[in-house]
Length: 373
Image (cartoon, rainbow, N blue to C red):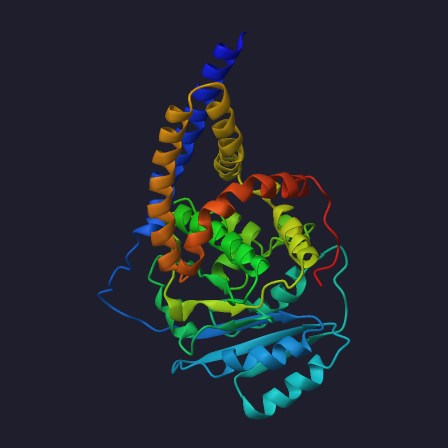
């Protein structure tokens, strides 16, 4: 094979990869980009149990818990905080909050659950303790974006809904790492929201997630993946979510906000733990997600190879088609999730995903640690 033939082959591969990427943009990601909330003919409010698990989170609870306790929600609701064997002042902090907020119900765990790593055991205790059918989950380092978080999330339920996926945003701070973390959160969200809208829900984030106790018990809680450190959010949703029973809520009042990692090592640790659960997804979800990631990984190397070894004009035309479509879809998606300030950087981050995949791909095969804090 000579250089001319090699260049032609690489260009053909480049076109196939680009076509695959464009297919994902147009078939999947436009679902979020052009999403419009449907008006409901009738509205019903449900009693809600908010559940937060915490281990040595006194500082975060002092800052964020009031946001969950001062919600403007007239229907019955409670806020359950499961203190998972904390060694800090979490217990005393919760006792003080309880004096002011009667809807707060602390649960104090004194023993570790053997052979169940992560927060699945404390979360299971919280769900079993909950008085109401609808549970709304978030983390100790998260705060609702508004006083109408509970109202917005529960308002999504109808007669067929058992799961509601929300957006867990990160606070906007100065610096490149902050933008990278928010970009990655957006990239993940545009996928899991769009897949849900197309009728193929595959994950949610524990920072902002709601489901009914009925579906939790029907699937025997987290028993199918108790051996995995993470997955109390994405693996459970991957197992339990269907085309009919899952909806999304991307209203800004329904967001939660959390502080992003402040160092590269913290960020890397979080991402490695997240990707260690991907291998447990359903086969179809793994296939679709892998195809998108693999073609994304190949896109820019094949672009460079096509420019050098084939014809730079044709290569740039193909690149331009993808760029225009991606720009429109991402801009509209970012506006929906209030991340539009990231748009000027999207090409830089999109190119950087090549290195992102290189760094974190091995996390799929690496055995995760046994502690969730």
